[in-house]
Structure formats: structure tokens, C-alpha cells
Amino acid sequence: MSPHDMADGTGPALPDGTGPALSVLDLVPVRSNQTSAEALTAARSLVRVAERHGYRRYWVAEHHNMPAVAATNPPVLIGLLAAATERIRVGSGGVMLPNHAPLVVAEQFALLEAAFPGRIDLGIGRAPGTDPVTRYALRYGAGGVDDSAVERFPEYVGNVVSMMEESGVSMAVAGRTHELRATPRAAGRPPVWLLGSSDYSARLAAEQGLPYVFAHHFAGKGTAEALELYRTRFRPSGDCPEPRTFLTVNVGVAETAEEARRRALPQQHAMLALRTGAPLGPQMLVEEAEATTVPDQHRGLLEAMAGRWVLDEPAGAAAEVRRLATTYGVDEVMVHPVAGAMASEPADAAPARERTLALLQQAMAPARSGRD
Image (tube, rainbow, N blue to C red; front, side):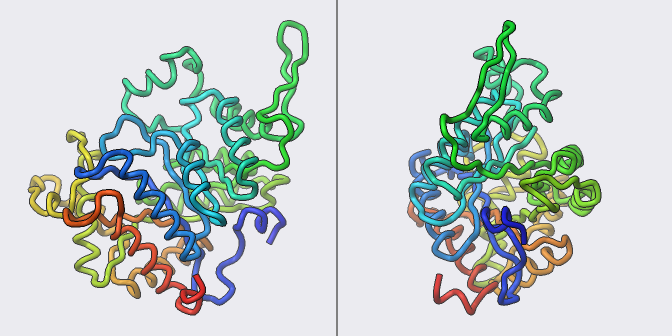
């Protein structure tokens, strides 16, 4: 284990041999009976559950103008979630860098690291995370990002890393050299991860010596190939002397496998709409999803998605998570809890998502559950 591994909580599998460490990915879903405020209250409760049960990190993703997703601004969310907890690492999964000026991202995460030292992760992605109109408003509405943002992504990643260093960067403008720092006196810098669902980010992460995460929960295919590409082409860096990655998985756990599959229906309908171009709406309640008819031509897609998710009772879910970790050679699995809510449950909470985290961790590490 390298010093950096120990600093950011990564490292070998759990010492008691029970399996990989667990983390959480949260899109902060907004249900049909929720306001944005209630969805945020539910997220604060969920991160506390994750911390109480020993999850390693809790990441939020950047999505814009989506009726079912409140995670529009990862830095703001990270501040809220880190303030609500004491130990768990909180980060972005990820910030979509072409939407922002690199200095803005560097400033945001330098301040978060100063406020919550040793607990912040900066995951960076290249996708827009939204529709074309909203993408235009983000990138060009204020003139802050130009058309070259996507092509200059590798350069911008390097800029963000350098700007967060204590020494900052030097820029030559109008014949003069100017010092540029994300924060006046940085005492530390959050680790930067590259995220992707194709081999582009795998290659870039390997070239720049950065940790890398493939979006297995979203793509479902190509995971092994992307991780192999990353590992074989990896160039060691001072921060990351060896390849470092983990797996993201859609997971729903309940007392029975039947209940776990039932609770996942709202998220499956949301993903089906996204993949087929159907109108997007707030996340359905379980009863609404059960009453929704899936067109015959889309049933195969729905079943294929469900087949790649971990939907089971605790022991079965834990066994599958261990199998996936072994298959892909990772010591950490990031769980995207996909359990939906019933109409009778509180609008400002996500009881089934909380149960997913609690039941899975207890099944993965029963010897430690009494101390969490």
C-alpha cells in the first residue's frame, strides 16, 4: 500500500477477508411525490447511514435539467453532505469538466479540501450530463467556455490538478508572468479521479498516472476491456504509483429477492426512458412503476438491464458483489442504490435505499456490523 493509498482510504481488500470495501454513488433522485428540498433531506439521511455502516466514500454526479435528478451541482452537494458527516470521504462522480472553466473547478475543490481536509475526492468526466440546449446554456451562455473545451479536456485536467497545488501555476499574459492558485495557502489537494464509459478516459488516466473508474453501472459492457487498457498502459505518477480503480454497480437489497426486484422497478423505468428517448419525468413510486405498461419492443432491454444489476436478498447480493469484485480485480465496489419508494413512505426520506446500504454491508462484513 502506498502512502497516498492510506491517505485517501484506498488500499487492499478488507483485512478480515470478508470482501471488497463498499462506497456509494448517489444521483439524488427526485420522486413524483417529492420536492427538491425533500430529495436533499433524503440524501443527507442516506449519507449518514452510509457513514454509520462503514462505507468508504460517497460520490454525487453532475446532471442538469432532468426531472428525476437533483444532483445538478456536485460542489454544493459535497459541502452539504460533508457537513452532515464526520469521517466518510465525499466527492464527485463526477464533475463534467467541459461544462466549466478549470479554475472554477479547482477553486471549488480546493476550498472543499480546506474545509474538510482529507475527506474530499474530485472525480472528473468528459460527458455533458444533459441535453443539447442545457449544454449550450452551461458552456456558452455566459461566454466562459469555448468550443474547444472537449478537445482540450486532457489539458484542462492537468490545469485543475496544478492549480490546486500549493505552488499553483504560472501564466504568461501580455508579456508578464502571473501566479495563479486555486486557494491562497493549500495544505493539501484532493485526489483526482478520471471517470468514463468508453476507452478514452482509460487511456488518458493511464497516460497521466491518475486513478480511473469505468461507469459499469451505466454502460454494463466494456468494463473488463477498459480496466485492462488502463492497467496495461498505466504510467506511474507521484500521487498514484500504481493503477487504482474500483467498480460501480446498481444494487438493490431487501429482505427477499422478490422485494428487491420490485423496489428496483422505478429506476428501471427511468433508465428505459433515457435509453429509448421517451419523455423524462420524476422518478416513479413503486406503485406507479407497477401500473406502467412496458411496450413489447422494450421488454428485452428492460430485462437485460435488470440482469446486470444486483437485486437480491442480503446473502445473495453480498455473494454477487464479491464475485464482481473478483472478476474485475478490484478491492472496492461503489454501490448505486436503486431501491425505490412506496407512496406510504415519507417524502423526505429514502427508507429502501437506506436498507439497501445497511443490509448489504451487514451481509458483507457481519463481524463488523455491531461496531458500525
